[in-house]
Every structure is written in C-alpha cells, then in structure tokens.
Length: 474
Ligand code: NAI
Image 1 (cartoon, protein in one colour):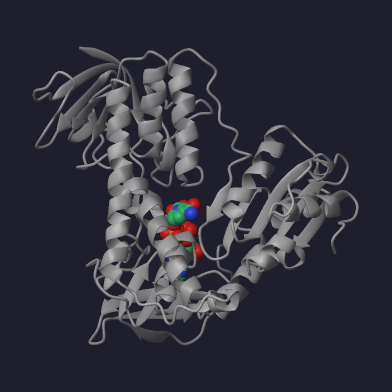
Image 2 (cartoon, rainbow, N blue to C red; image 1 turned 90 degrees about the vertical axis):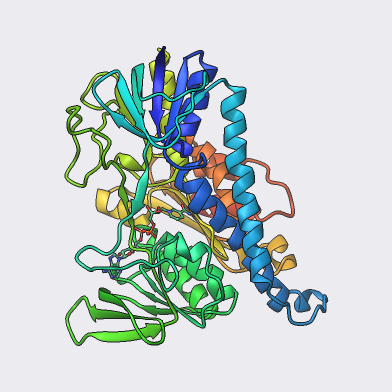
C-alpha cells in the first residue's frame, strides 16, 4: 500500500508532522528505531531533565527558602531513587501519549531502522516491523518522505572521550546517576551543562564548569549571560572560562579533565567523581541512504533544505535538528507542521525570527528575537528598556526577586526586536513577547496592554514602558 507521507523519526519534529499530516487527510506512517516514540526530547532530553529540574528545585527550596516563609520542615532528606522514578514515570506517560495519538489519528508505525532507497521508497530493518495491518514489512512505498532523525551527542572535537555513562557521562547518563556525585565537572557551559549541572548542584554536588568561550550561554544577550553567571556562582557553581578542554580520562577518584587557557598558558587538570561532557550535538543522518539517494548535505553534515524544508530531491523533506537552525524541539515541531501543510497543498511556513528559547535553570532564562550584540553588529539603532524583579511586588512576595526583563525595540519605529528575561517563570512569560513580535507590535503596544496585578508579568509591561518612555514602579 502506498502512503502519502512516511516520516523517519518520531521526535517532536516527526511525531507532530505525522499528526498534522493525518489531520489533513494524508495517509501517514512513521518509522522509529527505538522501543518508544518521542525521540531524544521525550526519552532522554527535555522531558526527563525537566522532571529532575523541578524535583531538585523543590528540594533546594525546601532546604533554603521554606524557613524564610515561616515553614519549618527541618533539613529535607533526598530519596534519589524516588526522584528518578518520578522522572521515569514522566517519560513513560509522555511516550505512551504519543503512541495513543498515533492510534487516534490512524497513523501506522514501523518499528525498525528506516533508510531512503530512492524517492518514494523507504526500507525498514530491525527486529520488529509493525504496520497498521500487521506483519513484517521491509519496503514502504510513499509519495513523500520526511527526514526527522534529529541529533546525537557530538563529543569534543579532536578529543577522545570514552563515555561509560556512569563516570564519564553525556546528557543521557547525567539523567540517571545512581548517587549524587561529591564533585561534578561539566565540560561546556551551554544549555545542557547548566541545566543538568543545576540538578546535581541542588542535590549536593560541587559543580565546576569548564567552558571554551569567555562567557557561559554563548550566543545569548551578553547582559543576561553575565548576570546569570553571577547568580549561578551564588548557588555554588565554579567557572573556568576561556578554557579549552583537551583531555577527559578515567582516574583513581573518578575522572580527570585537562584544559588549557584559550589565550595560551599552562594546562591544568582537575579531578571529579563524575564528568559530564556537554559540548553540543551533531545532526543524526547516518546510514539513512541519503547520499545514495542524491540528497545534498552541508559542510556540517546537516541535510540541506530550502525555505519550504524541501531537499534537492523532489518528494524528500527534512526538519528539526538534522537541518540548519537552533536544535530546539519547538522549532522542529513547527517545521513538522509546515511540511505536513505543504504536502497537503497548503502554505506551510515557519517564522524563524520569532523562536523563543528557554533555559530551565533557577532562575529561568528566556529570550526571543535579537540580542543587543546582534543589533549592534547589524547596525540597527535601538532603544533598551529594563525592569528588575526586585521592584516587582509579586516577586517579593514569592522570594523570587533575582533577574530582570530587557526589551530591545527599533529606535525609529518602536517595533520590538528582542526580549530577554532572567527570572522565576521566565519560560512562561516569554510568550507574550513572542505573540507581540509575530504581530509586529511595538513596546508601546505591550506597555498599553493591561497586565493583571500582582503578577511577575508586570515586569514585562514595566520594561516595555521603560523602552519608549518611563517605567512607573522604579
Ligand atoms: P551548546 O552548544 O549549548 O553548548 C556547548 C558549549 O560547549 C559551548 O558553550 C562551547 O563553547 C563549549 N565547548 C565546546 N568545545 C569545548 C572544549 N573543548 N572545551 C570547553 N568547552 C567547549 O550545547 P549543549 O549544551 O550540549 O546542547 C546541545 C543542544 O541541545 C543545543 O543546541 C541546545 O540548544 C539544545 N538544548 C536545548 C535545551 C533547551 O532549550 N532548554 C536544553 C538542552 C539542550
């Protein structure tokens, strides 16, 4: 039986694409090599890490903040097994949810490794292949193919790292450590390093981050990175910046990390019980038969795609981490929707200028649009408006006064070009900025929109007031 669309990979890009395609009346199938649907995000990424981030944040709050609120519970006791079980249960309910949605939308699934064997043909190899009709299937015919195979741990370029996922771990092992390490060295001060470093720091590990750049969260607004580094230092993080890691090896204590100053100088080695290597991810396009099928790749091993997510081979599309752009689940989801709409004859589109990004630490970091550095580089005249949470009533009531909101707007038109938030709940607050920017709104539009009192979001309104004129409460 021929399908309208076969999607290889069931992560947020692939599974959302499948559901949208089925909703639009296309005969749809998904090929997935793992035992469960949901890809990295649901199984070993966003979802389990958020379960641990939430639980460890509650643990830290119980230890530090409860007393200040007049709640005397004594020192909280950690039951790590139970915390990890909560994470596993969260993963299970999410991956089962995807299986349910596939059934509900009459999407066939093939368990096995998918390979493109030419336009219109996908092979599946593996122990079990399941279709809506049952039985083992080795070749599927389809009018369209969507590559949604995501990404994998990149490791450190030029450095041999033997991940055992117990002492030298990637993000996968860092989600399941059997006990809290006394010391944890994190290689890479990016999103994964700071999120998972936060989990173990809150549970008692001494965390040291070794980062190549002079700043953590490279690419974020400079003011945000600086203030966030200060806040993490207060939480006990130690930073070695401008340090290039040249070796990671097992040692008597656990593992050792060797690094040298990027600007030159003597190498240094530090020991730790556990080392987390979080130096980025690489697109996963191995053994997919893309080269043989004539699909072009770029210089960084990503599948080349055009503005409509089409590859150079008619009928083959690619979405998510396997193509260019930020490696974010929600970017992949939106691309999945756009491809399904395009295949169904509609006008699928993704606005890459308005893709929010959130770091789920404490406090959270959220941003959308341009950073101040990007505007400077592009020679765009802008206005800045800022407001600190220390001047927000709700933040004071909740003891969450760390951080600020920063808005960047075009000087001539007042159109909002970027919003950056450091603060409790930043990941939820950022979306009013995203909606505003989708509609091409100005800082005055945002400031004149009534915001409920008392909320943390009033700081967004105040920062908008500060952008085009003056804030009220400072
Ligand atoms: P990343 O690219 O965010 O950070 C990697 C860091 O490692 C960089 O700062 C880089 O300068 C540093 N580095 C590279 N080589 C080094 C060396 N030899 N020595 C010292 N430092 C070195 O990558 P990360 O954190 O692994 O995350 C991978 C992807 O997953 C990212 O694209 C990220 O956006 C995504 N992700 C997103 C999350 C979110 O949105 N909340 C959560 C987790 C991951």
